[in-house]
Length: 265
Length: 288
Image (spheres, each protein chain N blue to C red):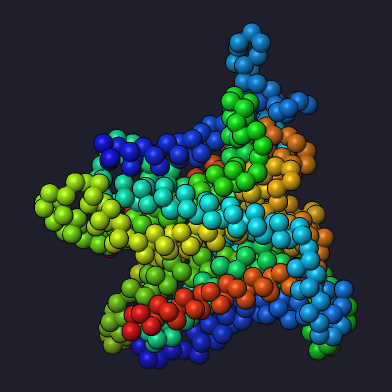
């Protein structure tokens, strides 16, 4: 249908403006010289300088990156296994519970996931003494648990859209099941695994609520640090930090998009 | 052998880190709060008898404040879902009907904010809706208002924040169903004399329904338990259940009551979650 109504076009314009105008103002105000974040006091980059001298921000960012790398990797391993099981193993005992446990974390409110995991860690500590201290490990476990669901769904849908004949041919030619998985299946689903890893990585970097529940004293992730500052109101150095994140994400996404378009055409 | 390992590893992980925690929440919700570490009574007393009580649930059901908070959360989440649908449907339709070359870019621009931190996107509205923020400055400059409007710390701010944050979750499933839709059907209806409104309600809307249901639930469910948005944009008296749970746990340190709040929230959400899985199962059957 070539014909697009004026109504549709104006909603599209309004919708994109709604999505992007708040971000534009954060970027603009990050270059504001005034300490009072809402009053324009001339152009300056001083907040960026202060940001890079702030050790708390750098420590929190480092912790967040470490957790995101670890949890995305574990989530990809576990999620790929789960996706394979769901797509290729047919019926087995306990399958309904398994697929239920895979999909539920995606629709669970974060406060419930966070509370339940913290109570688990507290109970485990009472019973076994582990984990002695909450922080990196507990946050990484929590993030792995909720993001492996996303990886599993992506891998599963990739496997379902692919026909099984290549794997069957390899089996018919005498390939042992494990070899077939490593030589045939995994290379075929590698794009889905990469997409899943990236999604798990961003989900982990983004999470505030679950991390707040399961972290202990002394370990703040970047979102936790940001939250503790913005609770008190708008602050110019957070504008600068937000601008850096917006720039990094937009650049990464656009480069990836153009690269993919190149490959396809 | 290898099959067993592939099943067992993720299965065990989920049993320990997903299912077991719910059993623990349920257990603690039946305990009483005490001042100790951890701050709740054990499930068995010294004589080894079961020592649980439904006091927390009784309290939740009889205390007016909690009933109102649950209802307010449902209402706010429903309003935000409605706004997302009203804005998201025409947007998804427009994207699905645009030229293939621009479609990818339009879709990318919907997903891009999702990769930028959720917290920072909510934060962006604080600068806009402040008493001396962008919106008020603009309104006063235009002479529409004399005094700054109180936008921040109101229910309106929460509503806008929810709709803003979850709009992409509405657009993506809608786009997926609208893009698959056979346009010849609409054309046929119009050729046969149906008006455009009639063709929309009789053809497009029923075909888009799976996407509408999925989108609405993907917005409604997380909006129900939202903590960050009411905290940053809402006032201290605009209570939503996610924030009440958080405060009950961290501020009042009443773990049993917080657990009971979580269980009731979960029960309220089980209905839409089951509905979602049904509709997805149907969708899959329809596709194959």
